[in-house]
Amino acid sequence: MHAGPVDGARAVAVWRDGGAVRVPADQPVVTAFDAGLARGDGVFESVLVDGGATPRLADHLVRLQRSTALLDLPAVPDEHWRALVAAVIDGWPAGVEGVCRLFLTRGEGASPTALALLAPVGADVLAQRRDGISVVALTYGLAADVRAGAPWLLGGAKTLSYAVNMAAQRHAHAVGADDVVFTSVEGRLLEGPTSTVVWAAGGTLHTPPVDTGILAGTTQARLFAAAEADGWPTAVSDGTVADLHGADAVWLLSGIRGAARVTALDGVARGDAGLTARVQELLARR
Image (cartoon, rainbow, N blue to C red; front, top):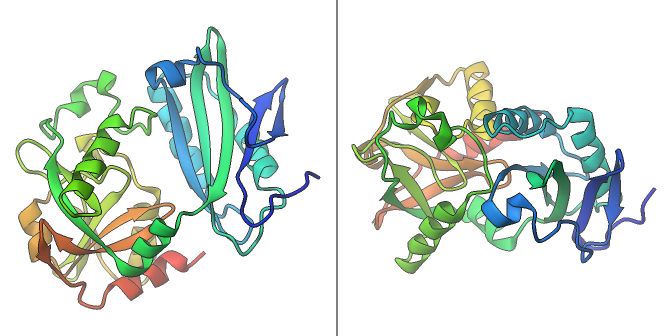
């Protein structure tokens, strides 16, 4: 067993010589010529570490393998990813929530890079989970049906090419908001830079269709399954910003943040009709 991190310190594991190897967090693990660094040519997943374990890892591995195939990257078997996760969370304090990020890049030449990083969940994320977020709607600059017919645009893949997503969040911060909801050029709802959009209206939970090229949300899928089992209808719906303004409640969902209620949209304050507690309770079910 490895000596575990103390007080939620960072941890790193890399796949080398046929096995998962734990390395010091400050030790270099990729070459400067790695295609993931040079071109953003790779995929990743962010997995919540809760109670020293990763209860949602299987869902993320399904999506990671789908992203791997969409980028035509060499496939890494699930058991290798599980070994990396086990190596990096070994000794992690049970009382510290962590975010375990799995990375697969094209590497250099014929040698892909697979590694796992672990760090505590940030205080800002915990605050948004608790207090909610203000968002602005921004155009993604594409028609909703473009990515479905253009596989080279990598719709539905969780890639390392996040520069646009991060620029959108910086713009949101510059105008006094916390996060973003992307829309297509014709005004259809898409997703957040790091989240799935869900809204409650007419007694039903709604989320946009993935045929627009958005990422399939693991947390959204889990919420909808739990809601259906609890008698709360769900629907995949084309929506607009006007639908969000008229909704009973709006949330941005992600694996680490969970369900963050939207407290303001484009500067207009909004409530959640008391539904956030129910959503969070459904997500807490294992």
